[in-house]
Image 1 (tube, rainbow, N blue to C red):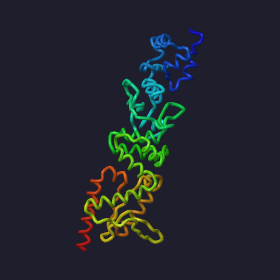
Image 2 (cartoon, helix red, strand yellow):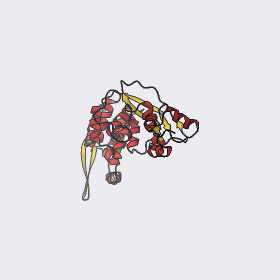
Image 3 (cartoon, one colour):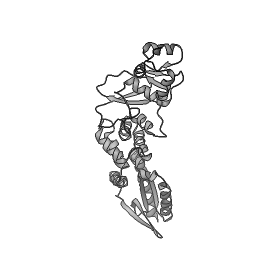
Image 4 (cartoon, helix red, strand yellow):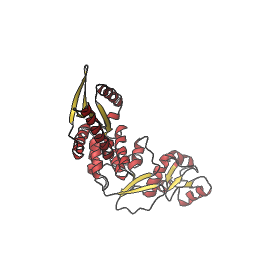
Length: 308
């Protein structure tokens, strides 16, 4: 054995999640021949051209992420999109593929199990300086939304990082401006503004515009209802027929806000108003379906009022 070669036991202590790159092994005195002998002896296993597992079992999730970096190109690739969010702690979103980004000028071969995205440029400081190379959550969320398979998934990938404390609405807005991209530019920008402060007012304004487009009288905004000592506000209402619409921003889904909203809506309904509710994301994703319900309700309650 080469006297300068680090013993296997010490290698295992240094290996992140049981894997090492050929370059790092070479640094510790293990050349290609030495690695090949360990693989031939069924003590180690190769997972691509650059990734060596210091065992023969399956790779962990974290090890697979390191494999993606090494196989695509260390110093070139960074975890991005959904994978970067998961590495930062995102929960309750499943995607078994590893997403990485590289600059568009890089010449990269396909790697099994890895989705390679090319980006025009990197913003200053967007890649984390310590640990596995990964894009910071706000930019990763914007790119995940741009690369999503649907608008619904894109909206989810913008809302979830904010709800789980990985990014703020303001950070998303700044990242969306820094990474223009080609896909869903307007949609992503709109959803980021919805998530940031002022989302409720934006939803009400957009709903009023939709009412005009669908031939409905514009509703009154922020209608006050008094219930004993408590006062509540309805987002939009046609007071002459006792019909209201509530547009819930993402903040209504946090903590106990949805419980407070339920009590409030119960008071409103018991007071005689009919209320339709929709999330702001629902308004963004399926405006036609929602407006069909709104129009149906307006016609129904108008007919009831005339009949009475």
